[in-house]
Image 1 (cartoon, rainbow, N blue to C red):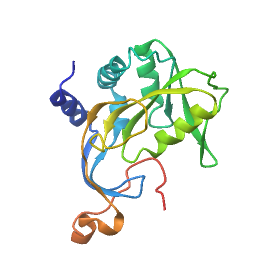
Image 2: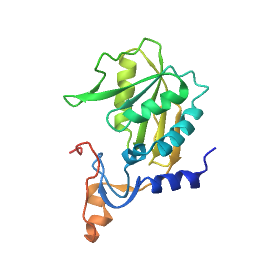
Image 3: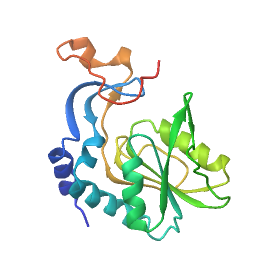
Image 4: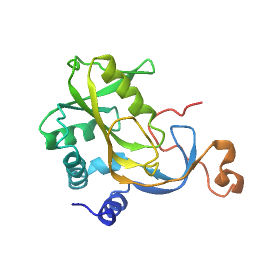
Length: 194
């Protein structure tokens, strides 16, 4: 069993937890950013955290693990490895989350959706739609970091490695912008919602 202290230690050691002035994919601003891609540079970190997450879903009869590209491709693999099931990923095509590369979900198949970090849950909801459109059942959502402190609700079981209430602000309400001391940085891989 991982302790919260050990999880935070891993996130800091791996360079995941960053502080500054960040423009999030959602368009919101925050003084903290979780660059979870850094977690997957080192298998000792990703294996430990993904095993911990998989353990939380071991009794949920998961048959498939799916994560949205790019952030959760490696995560889906690692969680599925611990659960002993298949995995694949969704990706955007013309701005729409979809399954490609011959991936398909069997009707009634129990699918665990994984994501490295959630702020608003937009990508997870898009993947849930893909699963349901193909006739799959969303068995749950697994996260490395829940930035909402447990406030996000997908209507299915939600389990995370760590839940942190990290404040974010609408751009026009951001105190860091008002202070003007720290430059705004867009560190993520997706374009910002306008």
